[in-house]
Length: 161
Image 1: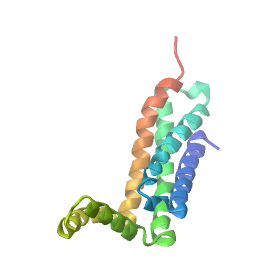
Image 2: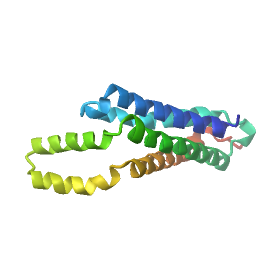
Image 3: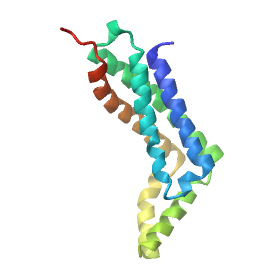
């Protein structure tokens, strides 16, 4: 299997598994634990480093490594997109309603009125549905992976004398 496919599958599957861990443990409901979601960035960067090292030495030009990393990020992002759709439509259909309730509780604690909370949630609710959320998951995976690949390729490229 090509490094780009191996890396892309690993990114998508491992990021999806972490998302489901966050869901099944209920950590997404706990304000103290929600920041753990960002472990997906560490997963993606770690997988990119691992998978880009699998590229044969002779093919390790900066451009070739960048291309491989972008392809890995694209494949991983597609998997994340579908995993996100399943997460919010099948396994956790009340996910967005729960997030809005938690957000409203936090805003009330900050002293906001019901009207202010409603206005604020009207703005954020556009992205709080399955498809836009899945698109954001894809874009986050793709952009993060592309940016990380720009840097990783500098260190892994074949050095020419």
